[in-house]
Image 1 (tube, rainbow, N blue to C red):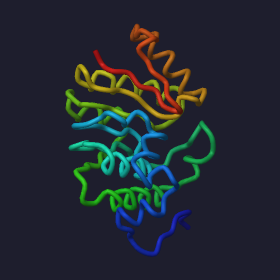
Image 2: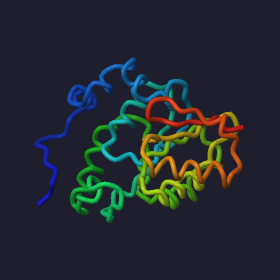
Image 3: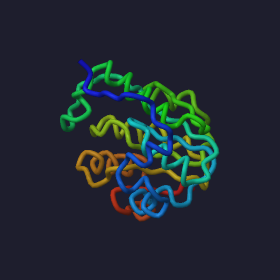
Length: 196
């Protein structure tokens, strides 16, 4: 039996009303998601999950095209219990609900792993936001796979930088790629860097 249930498809406006505070206004959205204050153009969200952040991106930023990368596939979760509790039927339902939320926006769902998607998407993206699998190795692979996909002057960043696993992955990526730590900005629960 599925862990999820819903009686009907909600419109984007209904999703906004049903979701917690930060998605209800641009001011609150940018307060909780500072990475998105000055983005535009074509971007990628790695780890779209339920689509709420993608909906905020399309509602409150001048993003012209959004690639939502998420395999929506059951997996064993080594970090916490939350994501590992869903079976494949749950993931399929989560994907369908995410797509319904974003209907009418210029969004393309890429139902592949992060590394598979990085191989097929363009190399001149305006921004990439990482919020996928939070294990150290998966996050590190996301960072390595996507950092070169952002064009010079573009923005690269992610979510949950207060979690130990993300901090370890970021630190390893910064060291391996010889990135000046002073260029990486932290605001709230997000990290970001402008590509030079």
